Image (cartoon, rainbow, N blue to C red):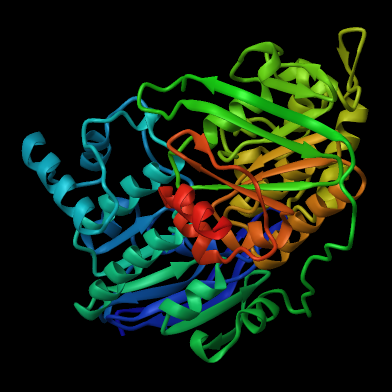
Length: 504
């Protein structure tokens, strides 16, 4: 065995993150680590990577005792990790960020050449000279992946590496991982996309509340069986019901705004309507204007007054607070830093977004009792696993923080909600709950816009579908009859051809 873990235990105040965890990974094996949000997966891989010291238990790597005191020691031993939350410096360019992850980086010119070569070989092109702060979430993920692959690891830990990739990009990545596996590199793979697990992984260890509850061969199980092993209960898909759309609540016409980032994607003449009780799904490859569209709809980017019309009133020149007061709320893709302030408590983060619609401020003074009650309501209604609402946002697992920020917006009873990647990095049960909550919100008469790269998600929740490509939006079409393959092509820029083909 390449890596053997025996009895690893790690406890924090109020919670046991890992409880006597044992499993092993063989050379060349692609091994899945499965579990719902808060099951202990992130803590476990942080111990393997030297970021966290276990309270008990031990590890062996290639037959020798393995106790990394820090990530540098792990990398020296041949262990690399792609993080779910990006560990990148926004003020540095791609090559500089890659160099920081290498013990002895080559000269800048040589490193840039290697980055270009490796990224192109893996189908994830990167410009080494671009500032990370100007990259989309998908492009930042590419930096993380390429940085690890340049280290020639013996064990590669991947935490939700495909969450911002299209199906075509995922398949290219999988080809790379299979090649690495054939060459003897072991891969410890964390993902909530269970069909990916079934397609890629040789074995799986399943955690629940910090304990190992099962092991299996993923391809011998269905995605539903894997999900039910993770959560310990039977899962039911979201219920759509039947509903007739009402009046147009959100109208967008001729929306053209420049991206705030020099290398971003400007929106070009975007137009669509969303009616009360309707869910519009918008797909797009990372970096094609999704972030800019959310910013333009939320008010963080201003436009001509009439480009965005809310309940019959032009709001294009209003900022986020004005639009929230009028009934439009939003949930951006980047949950840690954009949707939530990392160092602030959950209570404080509830205030940041909910103060207007939940009336959390009176005569200029914060009503902390009411604010805490709002935070506790979010935690309760959306099953956010946390010791309490006084903990910092960054202390939550990615999936639990996602449940919190989406729940915070839904519980403001909006007329319109716009969300980008609402279930990124969220386990099957939590993803189903978030999707059901969005469907239920539409059933109550809200207009819902879901921007997502999860095609199954769009097919599950949306009534109509459109695709963003290079800042342009295709004409929305009914979801009924669309296939994942058609949507994938449309995301890649073939939507005009596809629409013409379907209409013909």
